[in-house]
Amino acid sequence: MVLNWNETASRRPRHFDGYGANPPEFRWPGNARVAVNFAINFEEGTERSPLLGDGQRDSRTWVKSALPPEARDLMQEGEYEYGTRAGIWRLLRLFNQYRAPFSVFVSSEALSVVPETAKQFAEMDCDFVSHGTRSISRVDLTPEQEREDLRKCINDVRTLTGKPVLGAFPRPPITTESRRIMAEEGLLYDSATTNDDLPYFYPVEGRPMLVLPYAVDTNDARFWGGQSGPGFTGSTDFFDYLKDSFDTLYEESESTGRMMSVGLHARIMRPGRAASIRRFLEYLREKDDVFIAKRSDIARAFAERFAPEDTWNWPLATDS
Image 1 (cartoon, rainbow, N blue to C red):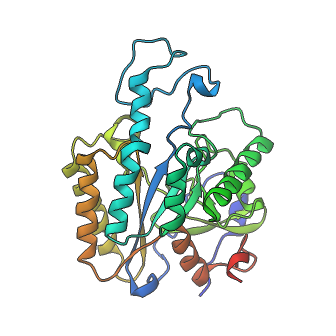
Image 2 (cartoon, one colour):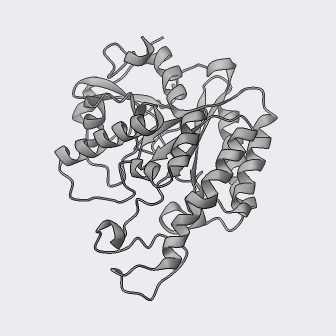
């Protein structure tokens, strides 16, 4: 079966149509109804910092500072350091215990901050999604600079872990050039959107490219509140929301598979918050028809079934 993809959509500026009343009828590998992807955002040590030549420090922490923005604040820096010192290891132990594959949305320069982490990633059942080289938003990148940054991230990951990068979620803002650059640089899929609960194909330069939507509601960034939506205040909030999201997708998936992304951040995974992920993994363990998978495996499973002819970077050269 090949899904229809609308070539005329390349002349439209927005992606409103979707599958509508006719989503594809299929199941994931193992006859699973819902594909669940745990995505660790690993970016500590690449945030804005005077130590890295930035004009001001990163302030995306719970700690407020009275210091001028160009000065270092050790308390704010410590929030990021928690991710490399404790948070990431807690998550890795958890996924190892439950034998759960996962993805790493990586700012590649973070891999050299604590080399032992890169070695651990290399040995575990995980894959990588490009999050750029650093955890900073760049509003003034030219397409050439954006391409260079993506290429460096891909090369860094390969050098430090031996693993390929098959998809990307560039640091926002996402430009109209971003998806074209991903396709031209050999990536199978783009995850820089939150507009669906299923993968789909969209025209890039007249050829279909796979899109694997992400999610910011089933995401621990909501412990911060603000732009990510109403804030979580405890692990029960997070678990209840993950469970409700999964249950809804499961109910909808009797004839049509669904996909769920769980976004995590190493620096946010304090003990009480990580308890919600343990509870959710226990809940998923009770189900026989769930596909807990790396993002690349979800992409492969969908592309093997539905990729139109001449899809960008499919079949994968590494799979042939």
